[in-house]
Amino acid sequence: MVDFKVISTGSQGNAVVIENRILIDCGVPWREIKPYADQLKLVLLTHIHSDHFNKAAIKRLAGSRPTLKFMCCAWLAEPLLSCGVQKRNIYVCDFANTYGIGALCNVRAEFLKHNVPNCAWHIHMRSGKVFYATDCNNLNGIFAPNYDLYLVEANYGEKEIKERIKAKEIVGIYAYEKQVLKNHLSKEKCNDFIYANAGAKSRYVYMHMHGHKEVSTSDNHGENNQL
Image 1 (tube, one colour):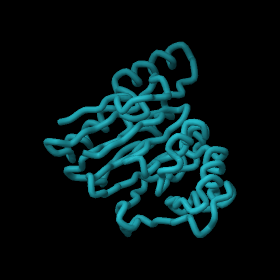
Image 2 (cartoon, rainbow, N blue to C red):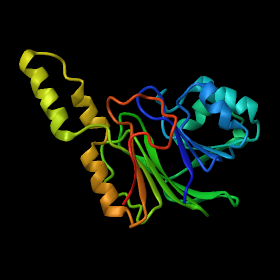
Image 3 (cartoon, rainbow, N blue to C red):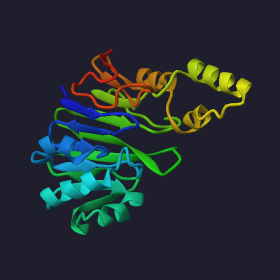
């Protein structure tokens, strides 16, 4: 079973630790990363938004761990350099290849539709396989069959958000929810993906849920379910 800790998920910050050795996203203050920093072997980053890419925290992490590996797609290479991460520690991934990190894991990135370039991560370890995807409109064409753990955005319910948009339009109020529809994944789309891919023993966690407290201190932020 894959061990994981959701440090935080939501618009105030995103960070997940897998097996105490892999950090996915670093969008929280340094004080929340510090307890895990010494054991980390790899940092996987998705996109430039500050709730996923906290520049001050990344700078402190890189300074405290001068040999720590950071993996990203091309759009985050320069931002990492500007945070003081050494070029030799930045591994830029494309979407065609799987990358081996010694005996730790194999990882693969997939492009996600958002309002800035973004990616999902497939992580294969001895303890199991993990799929991570947040801040996206859809997961069309992405496959992660029979993974052990799915960490997938379930930002809103489609019926509820459409009702909110309609109510605001009636009274002439700007409906920011229209942008949410374009840039975030609904619970319904999340469920469709999970049930198309999950196996009998798979677990899943709803990430980036609208209206949740942003900092979680347990594995059970959102939902932690087994099918």
